[in-house]
Length: 463
Image (cartoon, rainbow, N blue to C red; front, side, top):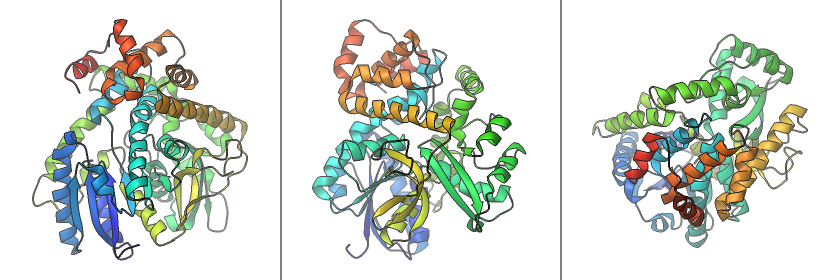
């Protein structure tokens, strides 16, 4: 590599960008960043300029000579990049609000990465990530792609399977938060514990051991049911798991499992918010507005505490550590989305899983878990099949496959209402679903209407 590292961040106008800067600043002595390019689309220009000014203040305070550039020209930014990070949201937060409100209007869960909303986030995101990969092949063929755009696992699999790009790692903050909070809950320090994670993105389990190999999973389970903070992300409601179920499995499920193990209660809570203060996306929109008001302050040169209120806190720091570990061949243990390669024998070798891995100069080397118990095997095979149908539908625009993905998803009751949700979401996201244009035109010709008034207004306003 050249003297100093060139990093390109696509989705540079994200509210997480200051955390990304903080992560690079604290690692600068071993990760010599030369320049950072913040890339966004025209509608994100104001936010990316705010982020860039704040990034410059942060680097100046740190005393390091790092150049910050902004551009809407992605290919120009990517030229000779060493690492590319992706943190974009196709359709902005308005798209998330549509993903949440349309399913909830039919009494189904509306959530950013689970259920119908997660499928549609993949539909919008995968064509864009494949265009990014196409550009990378032309102008930075040796770069690593570090993806934390959700749904991270499906996006990463699309890059490998359809983009034919293997130098990619997908990240998630959920394992990071668990490994930060659990040690404190069981009166240990992080360096005293050994973790092993198994599953797919937002659908994994893990076990915990001490440095002598003694299992401490039950200790964490006890802390969980004593009400201690073991790292539940800010965007997930704390409905308790059933203790007997967790003790039987002797594995700690991730926070998102609440949507599956306590579906009835999580749906009831989501419906209550839908009817009152608004969905999570609507709440996050207000948080983002407050954050960018802070970022505009010409005196602010550090990441504000308010950023932790976003559900994705620590994503960016994980990205920095991943880059650091590749660049310096640090062999760090991280939980990432990468090719299975036999880590989970019940899933295809070439599919993407989210497992404990060693991050080296050649990328992620997954740690084999071995055979899963019956319940976890059944869950993960169903969820992976749903992901595979979703990814293929995102690439091909095949409406029948979209219906298959909906039918497989445990959070979508199969039937006419599910088809109605699919059809309304297609119409609501028309501007961001080029692969489905023929079907959307047909649905509109049939007179399909969006029944949620908030979404109908967003569509009318062209958002």
